[in-house]
Length: 289
Length: 234
Image (cartoon, rainbow over all chains, first blue to last red; front, side, top):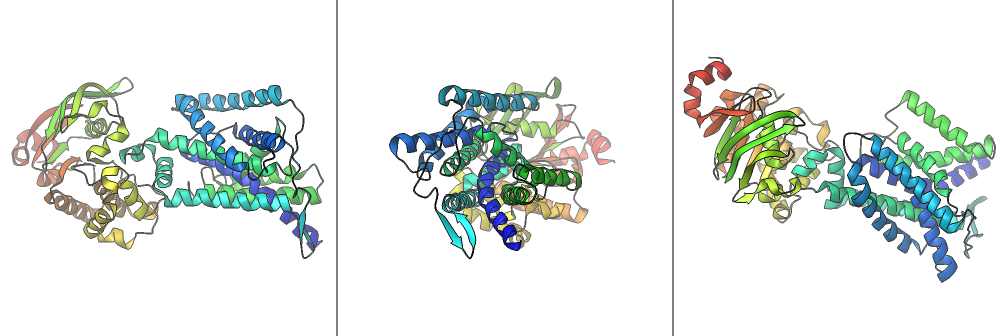
């Protein structure tokens, strides 16, 4: 029994690392640009297709293709912020909601058109390999994904806390006007935040590819989890999103193990409801830690 | 050094200041006085580009400030310490100061300026690693002024630095501002506390309903019957 629980916790933490990349992106955009990006999942999908095509046509390992998906998604993020989001930033948040929602639908349908609804998989040499630690089963592809996800999350945290641009981003998230008084160009900071958030989504896509299928709707699985994690971890709080994502991975995995294969989400959403009812500000502290 | 000519600005359709003309010479301390809602803060926000000009012009050393995007204005050497302190609450004292020297002209000398700020405000040096939002109002005011100084400003604009401070903290704050002024920085001081402000500045402008209704040397204003009756309670 105890071993079953421990194994479920391991499985949950591993997938929680991927959720973390998506939710950190959502929370970064919310914290800095102050919009909810409903299209974040579709950028995970784009990351997956980039890795799928690089693997299928050029034999590039999906993990290595992260070096392509991240910069490509970063540039897309900068362009989306500069040419689309910037136009709808203002006191009224309805246009922002509709814009990112429309972007999500557009990308989804473009993917259906271009790539069809077929499930695409990439088989790597390590896709079926697993480590065995004292009776526990740890799939190699998921362990690599988890390790890289934690590394990237740590890198983002270090960027926000040690570089001038990162600190400028935190300053802009805490007080946009006063950040401008410091000489910080808000649009530039927003572009970098959006780019970084999409780069993380792209990384999530690449890391998923060795053990998950790419299809046009795949992003919706992850964006749902990300939104829950972002609320649980306090909107705008990077560390909170990371911890909440890992918790949700574990909750989902325990749900699958003990409630039923299709009911992992029940446990996750029960957590969300309880949090909103008893601690609506989320489990994290303030913003942009 | 700074010259406003017939500056008008509005929030939406509500006019906030109209035809405000003021000038400040290098190294001078100038007050901007008046009651709540007279347009003092709006004047500072117009200089910093946080509100758009409806008409008029603002120049700083011959540069047309009004045509610059707001984030380019600090680079000229204009530091604006906003009303209500507005430190970055989730950043440490030291990070707040670092951000104060974000622009290239200040970044090069950041370490040296920070030492100077810690000399002026030893309390900040003691609290380097503390999150700014957890400090007292007086300490946050010191930090807001210190953050402004990190820019190595030629003009330091202070919006109600005594707001919400205990009298003893107000004394300390005004002493520090006087000290900064003596070091050669021009000061534009917005204050509701008119008698305190007049004891610090060389000259002052009095605003009422968004217009400059009076200006002169501090001494003359302090002796002016109208100022005494309206603002000094004499």
